[in-house]
Length: 97
Image 1: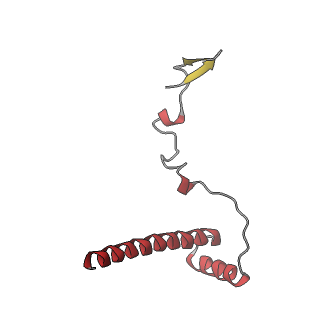
Image 2: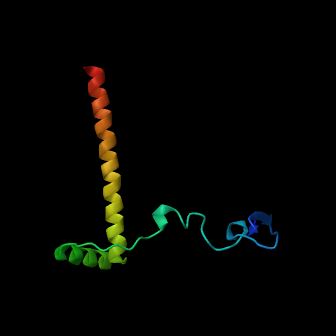
Image 3: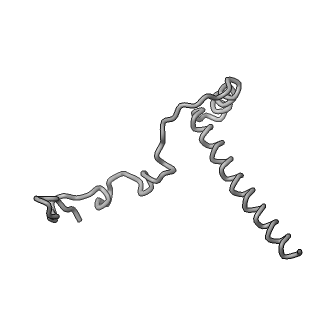
């Protein structure tokens, strides 16, 4: 439902329709999830690492920045998995102590 602000009051306007109200707006529901919104940054990366990224990305047919993002996500997942394993081991050690 659309509303307009008029003189400090909200007023419904049935002629206005949000994209989310459209059945076929062509925009995926998760288009604005944090994972899908890119942020421009500047960082310094060793030349040999950039060279490897570009070569590997070219070999598999994707952009090197896409590959970098994939590798960073893998690392995020591995770190979370490692912490979960550490917690399980600590809990088991406490149970046996």
